[in-house]
Length: 356
Image (cartoon, rainbow, N blue to C red; front, side, top):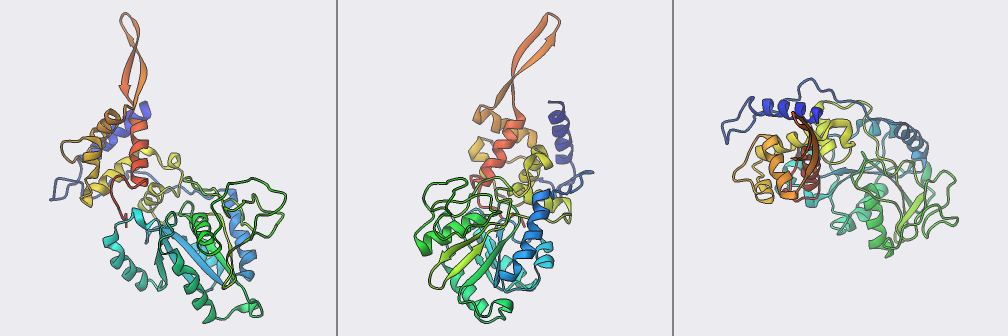
């Protein structure tokens, strides 16, 4: 409670800071003395080593990133480590991003030298069918290095954590092999159809080729080759999400955290909720008002979280020392309210938002 009281006081102070002329909202977000802490656990370093060793087998790199942060947080280390290969950028979760920003995003990416971009939504297989033909075109028009004699295509899937790499693989299998919807099985003695056994694999799946989840770090080792198409014959290598060993700035880390690429507790749900409110107000995305019953938009995170807690019944019992003894009181649980505020954003309940 003391941590939250201090955090909310700081948020309230920040909310009374620099304002824009429109709506009285903050013109910039005050991160204070926070630093973008590194989050590069052992399995990420191991993943980079495995990816380097597996590159010899790869004809093309498919980089999967979150469409809500198309310009932020893409790991430059991946390109440095993996070298030069035909490259396709897949911006996944497009159903959660602002569709009116796509033209601007594509132009900015083109200026950065990224000319092959596809927006996807893997839960509904939207636009996923465009990937294999484009990959085949890129590979056929590029040198195949040590794999010129191979008829099949070998594709390495890379990206930061929790952007939907495994979901993309499952979506491709559904579309091209009519597989990927059966139950999930751990540590099978016999590999699933389309998967070639490898002693270092953490898991195998029956039907569904890879495990998926809403938390970063579900895939912790480079998996075996997974067949996703027969005509042409295409295999994918799923890889663990890898963050840069050092983030560019605090705001980039905040955007990655909001999209689930960094564990919430490493950044702090309090400041994440406040930064999210700042972004929503700046973009005039006021869906939170209707969802939580606010009479008007607010730039004060404590005020907003109060309505979130009241709407969702997020309370906690607190023991208060009085002159007559201890008294149990019910108080609003701001920590739980912040968590639910973040969950609502990630599920698209607060509108389709592009953070960049």
